[in-house]
Amino acid sequence: LTVPALRWPIKRKLLVLGIAAFLPLLCLVAFWAYWEGAHTREEQAAHLGLASLQAARVIEHDLGHVHDLLGSLAAKLGPALDGRLERLLRDALAAQPVADSLLALGPDGQVLAAAAQEAEGVRFTPGGRPRLDRGMAAGRPDVGDIEIAQSGGGSVVAVTVVAVPDTV
Image (cartoon, rainbow, N blue to C red; front, top):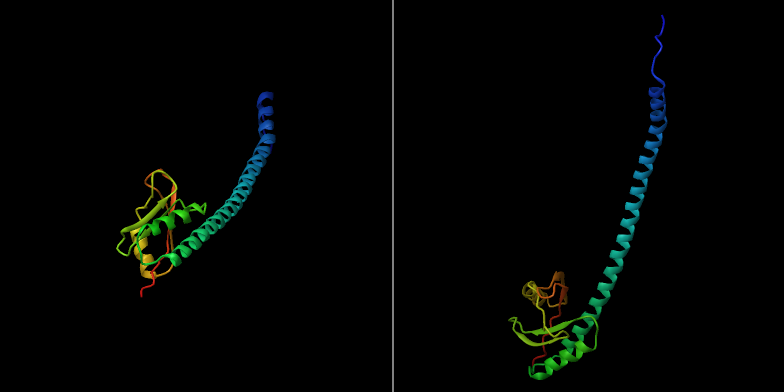
């Protein structure tokens, strides 16, 4: 039994030898790129989780300020609906950096008084009325979802605190 000899030209032999040497190197580079990509994705997911946690803490801190502010306002509200309520809202709004507007609404949703830091006035979100109804029914503070404001496109969170004035 005899094996026929391959009669390839030298160019073809060098090409096959180059491919045979380059192919494992190419596979090694592809594996390294995949591994680095997976490592980078894991690292980015960890950073995103940390950033989300930090953002949640900032929002929770700010909402805590708003909750305290609204709680103190609810304690100060009385049965009189003259200009004192609007003045109280303006003073409270000026004393804190978080909220950009405050509304005092009656049980029927009618605006009793309002104060806003911006010239465009108070922004009331589309989900405000159902949120008011849920807050009134629950009788406790209620924090809404982050919504996009109709004017300006900024993010808005509705915080509802029910204040029932003492009746004599």
